[in-house]
Structure formats: C-alpha cells, structure tokens
Length: 135
Image (cartoon, one colour):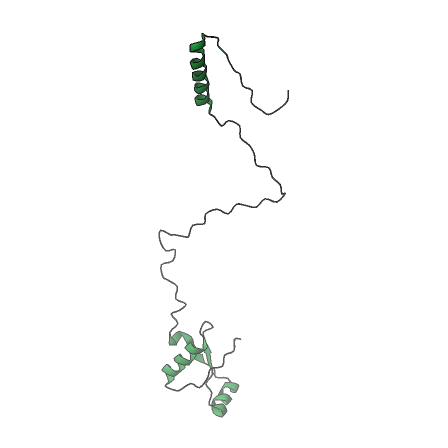
C-alpha cells in the first residue's frame, strides 16, 4: 500500500523448544543492536504559519587583539581642546564691553562644567555662568 513507513522483514526459524526461545531472543537483540531501537522519528506538528527563530546562546565579544592602536580619547578633552578660539565679531565685542561677557568657540563634545573650568584655568577669572549655543 502507499505509505512512508519502513518495510521490515521478520525471519523465523523453527528449532527445538529449549533452544528456540534463546535463539529467537538473540536474533532480536542482534537485529536491534545492528539497526537501532529508536528507528521511527516523529516530526513536530507546526500549528502557526510564522516561524520564530529560536533564541540561542549569545556569547560576549572576546577579541584576541584591539582593532585600533590607541584607545578612545573622547573623555580626554583638555582645556586647549575645549576652548578653540575667542569670537571677535561686532556683537561679541559689544557683549564684552557692555555685559562683561567672554564669547568663545568651543568643542561640541564639551559640557558647561568643562567649559567653565577651562576658562577659569586659562584666563584666571571667576566664571559666573556659561551659556551655550550650538550653531
């Protein structure tokens, strides 16, 4: 008939009663050892159309060597990198004269605390507050 099952043949040998039982068991055991006991494999029934990739083990990166020779230096902004140059336009000069305000072009990565510390250390002044404008 049409099926995808396996065809198995069983051979029987007729022997005297006392030897037949032992010989039959030995043949079955030999056949099981040769063929394997769990021969029929079952396939898991899929109930949904979507396939979700199984979540497997994710190992952390463990490189053998660093890909760049120098480490990251974004934290290492010194006062000379933070303050690039003073702004000398007319409006900046007016602020210096009228409002006692210094105007600098600074590094974009610097925050207000770093700018304040850089101005105080380079120009020996006490900075009251820092206003920033990204342009």
